Length: 379
Image (cartoon, rainbow, N blue to C red; front, side, top):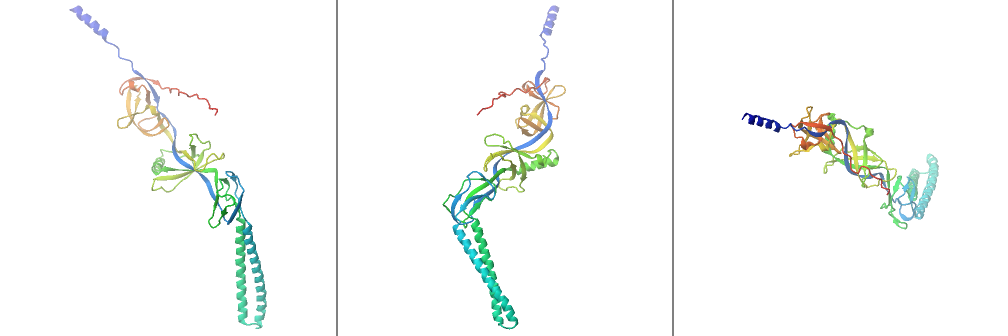
């Protein structure tokens, strides 16, 4: 019996196994960095100035003196309207003005004689009054004749239609031989100033209020006025090479949409941007210093959608930590509450490390991106 008991005790000691080693997990240290808050908003390209070229004289269009789609300068002659009828009206007005001048000269000479005769009672008071009235009438006639001549001269000048602004002109809306009218203000062409251009877009009033409150609390630092830049993403997905600057935000909210209109000025030296083109603007709304950031891959979501991370404390014990997310920038999450810089979060191996377990930590290494090396397309 003694031998059996000793044998059983020996077998029991042999069956006892050492505890398993701690699971190995990859951890990332929570970083604190300066983060730019950017927003991407859709909008349209609009010309800085747009002028409609319209007829200011009535007549037959004789010539078009520009190339469609070319750049024109202010004052450049674009169209020529038949000047012959306008020249006749101008000549008639000038002749009438000359006649009025002669009549007024005669009336003044007669008035000068009557002034001497009335002193010696050589003429009646009625005759003198009639001469005075005639002089006033002739002076008024001359003023009217001068006004008619000036109007005729302006209309004659309007026969040469000039560009009101410098910019790029579109197609001609009227061809040679057409009758254009000053009364109807016939539209002849449109000129648009396209360097620089405006980028008009909208932002919700809710977002603007949120940013203003963050600025007031000091949690978000405002970007300096000279650095308030905006970058355009074009329709083909490319980034426009010339950054612009934000000019203003409107002072009123559109009651139907709840949006605020904003405008940016974008250089366009290559005339790549065209009026009406759709684009997306990336605007830096502010800069947050000492922002707590972690990769998005370290976050898990609970049944209610609450965000949590697994934190390894100083004793290498895993803790489940609920966090509050401020916003996501690319693959990085900005944490508002729940984490401090320097703490370690599990990036890989979380399935082997339930809360409360002891783990062995190794630094997380970002895997190489597949296809990182690309060849340029010669086309």
